[in-house]
Image (cartoon, rainbow, N blue to C red; front, side):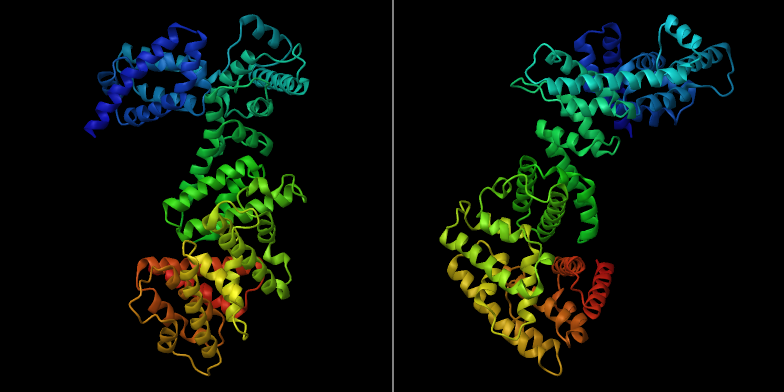
Length: 558
């Protein structure tokens, strides 16, 4: 607490000096400096209010003898009054100075001064006396006239910017770069005012013809912050222009989304989908340049977490939302697939882009075999123009992980010999770093487990012990090994789909979930399975009910 008090006193001196400088000069440099510091000053005002509201008026002036000067300088600064919630916080601070029952003339004088400053703030905009008389003569009160004037000014400037954008190389009718820069600077403290939205949009959409960006970085940052905090709502075209013109804003939007996902409930894809759609990133990613930046940040997150299942699931949900936005925007691709996935085989990308629900169920097995063949050629033969190696092909494949999960279900629900192509696809999905020989060993192991499971599905009774032995779960193998993760997935699919699996499902999960990490893995599997079944419309009443019950029980345990 003492440290907070020292910090506030230091901040107080800093802002007192700043306000004095801003008050004494009205040059372009001081205006720009004011705009740069508006967010920090508002945060200081918040801290100041939290301190002031705990004191009476006398204590306030003992602690901060020049508090009236600081607040007065702030109240007469139009940039501060126009910025976000600063006006409201200033009013709160001023109210803290009022003596409810003044005991002497000094306190009464202070109350009168505060009331005068409050009147100034609440008048919002001030015009010359002549203007006021003219508007009153026309029958307009200031409260009616000033907002209308601001709105007309904004629309006029927005119209001029649109004409500037259309004029192209007609230099005689184009707005000068200096004026564009000045406009963007002036807009910084006004961005959250609803009437200013058309001007903000026009500035974002208006592209100059200079080699370097004309608009101020502070303008882009302020607009982006307001969008992320839902303080303004702009058309998607303007948001795309913002993120194309200012890469730090796009990166911050992506980090903002990742922070929300990390702080939310784990393994809840419906909530993740809502966050992703609300971020506007899938819609903006219809532009390949934005998609590539977002995808690269997902790749970094995947590498940083060593391929965490939650990140993979998030990538898959984002890809699904992106494809829905792409289809909604235009039935035909405006950009070639190569622009979205430049390092992978176009034919492979085209196949994976097919939504399973758009493919007849009778052709799912054939499609999966085709995907496996193309991936294997890209990974082992390096054909079809793949330049990124196995990990690049795997990174493309996990975007469309619904196909991989479908492999396990197809293998377990078929009485025929497991196709080698599907076994290879599963092994590659769970162990992309394995070499050809190690992957072949994994396919042999998975094939043996599948054989046991299929034999057990024909048995009249199932036991947990038999299932454990068949899957090799009674050995000392590291449960975190990719092959063991794959086998666990097969077991979970089996107990959900096999006729007798429902009777031992809880015992099997109790057996498998011997660590918190594996428990979260199983929760993730159940949530993803239900999410996918719902999308594809393939949920059986019995399996769906069991999966939901198991998911609810496990979530109460963690």
